[in-house]
Amino acid sequence: MPETPEAFSRVDVTDAAAAMLRHLATTHGQLMFHQSGGCCDGSSPMCFPVGMFRVGASDILLDTLHVDGIHPVEVYMSRSQFEYWKYTHLTIDLVDGRGSGFSIEAPEGKRFMIRSRMLDDSELEAFGLATHGAVAP
Image 1 (cartoon, rainbow, N blue to C red):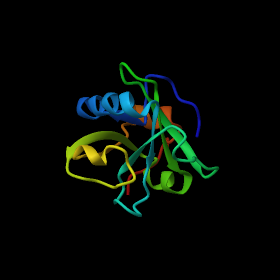
Image 2 (cartoon, one colour):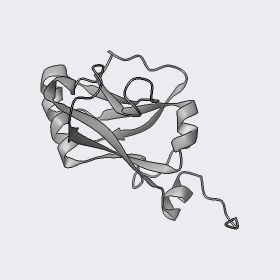
Image 3 (cartoon, one colour):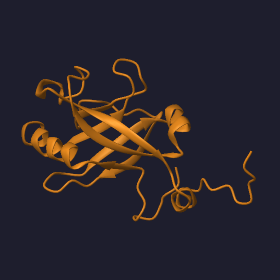
């Protein structure tokens, strides 16, 4: 994945999710996300203490979240799944309900979820995904 200007991101976090990350970091230390491929809990972002989930050669770093008060939180996804999501911007949100038992927010009665939108033209350009001169079908 090509490096992009800092003004552009592939992943963001809502205020509610950021507050939960700060809460979880006080107990678990430095955190990371892996965007699930749909196996156990749909396509939910799974949150783990760094070192609890092994990132493999087929995983890519989508972005790093900068949440005030805690270490940066890296967000990963499998390379094959990224092919389906590469034209989208992801926002990690927090909602009521119990998600997967694998993600560390589960005991809190909350779960992280992904909201997505299509990348705009400037983002497509920054990420090297723009198709110059393409004609819409």
